[in-house]
Length: 319
Image (cartoon, rainbow, N blue to C red):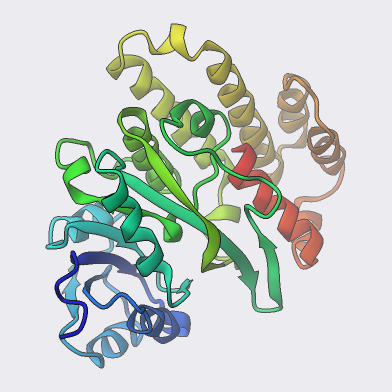
């Protein structure tokens, strides 16, 4: 078959009741100009038609199913353990790859055998249309970029491809967490290896209200603290080497914890946390003002494209 002489890419696809967008996501993999790939489809005990949709395709999809619903990290690890490819990519059941994604990313590994991870630009969209292109104004760095990534996280999971050999001795997804499992995994890779980047949007990331992005800011803050504690224990000299970045990281945690307190109807606690954040950027002042309104007001604002765009950019680029 055409393209089978190229390295195989194992596409990790985890699904929990994803029938609404699933067929479109899978078809975007089949539309790839790079042909040597497999999908490791892990059904996390879905009760809708996800299994039926996945099994309607050919043998390029290897279907697995959990008997019970597991946390995202565990399901990703189960799928990773089944991967046969030299490279690992990720495609969630509500996202879309553009046709040349793999074709343009895989050569980056061939050009530099030390590169462990290659990412690309991404377009974020919802059912109303395009929200933003995440690297249109901000151009991410290449190489050993752990410091920059830890201070200002900017990776989109669906855009990432990993060299499997580079993660054989690494911890995979943290099964203790639900929202920071991808960031924690990729940060660990960046701590030890260089990253590369394709300056072109090759994926479309769907934003909707069920996304973890907007569900639980307080839990996200706790998971980030857990990751930081792990780094302090595992990496000698981490606190001294990344002192400035740790301060910025902790401020981001405060911001997300404060937002979580407000969304949990504890505005006084939220305002107390906001006052501790320095420097007080415009976003901090705006969120502080919002704490004098009902959290339901926040959900109302999320209906507007502008706030949705900026909320998402804040989450990805500031936290």
